[in-house]
Length: 123
Image (cartoon, rainbow, N blue to C red; front, top):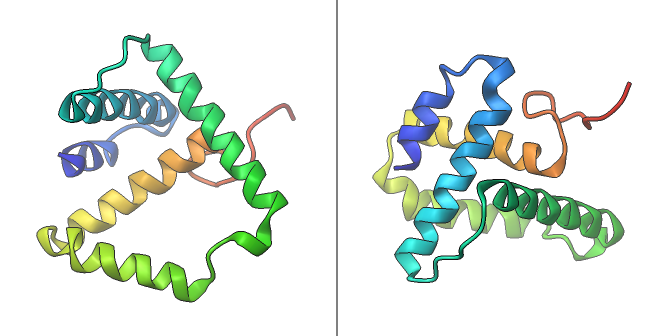
């Protein structure tokens, strides 16, 4: 399922990527709620705003608590688990597409330009 969106994402023009990432986020949150049986009645705009608020909160926390962030070894263990579980069911191309879209989605919800990672805003 994730790869379908990631594959399509590669063909999205740069000026439409933010919208695509937001729409994908909305669809995935709804799907995960349906799978868990915990559907929330809220607008798509509220879902996006909630996701962006959480992204900003997480980024702020990370800047304020760098000593509590996982080190390289811990991140390596997480990557190994993902690679050896979820990753075994995906081709290298699927993993690469998924990683790119996930990186860009995280950036979008943190208030960064999805492609460059630079902060969005005036100027």
